[in-house]
Image 1 (cartoon, rainbow, N blue to C red):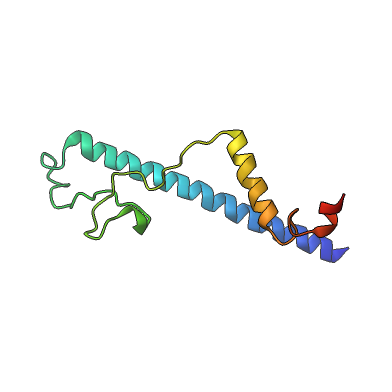
Image 2: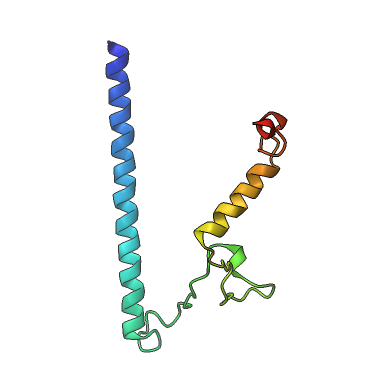
Length: 112
């Protein structure tokens, strides 16, 4: 009984910490975006306090989005061609038939 109560209390504490961290992160993100928006509107050249700051360019988070020189790739990374349902069914049937448990490798199915 006491173990259950201890578990509930520990879970409640962890839940409150997680929610508090989420709210803190959202507030930080909101304040930072408002600060960047204010710097863009005011212009960093006209604002003496912001004159010494270096304006950051948003960098992609994944290295796959950059070419060998470190510049952002502006072309699609994945191009898919559309296919009909019948084509997809034929390809899946071919994969099934070529698999070890498929129709063509099972001689008992061919007799019937």
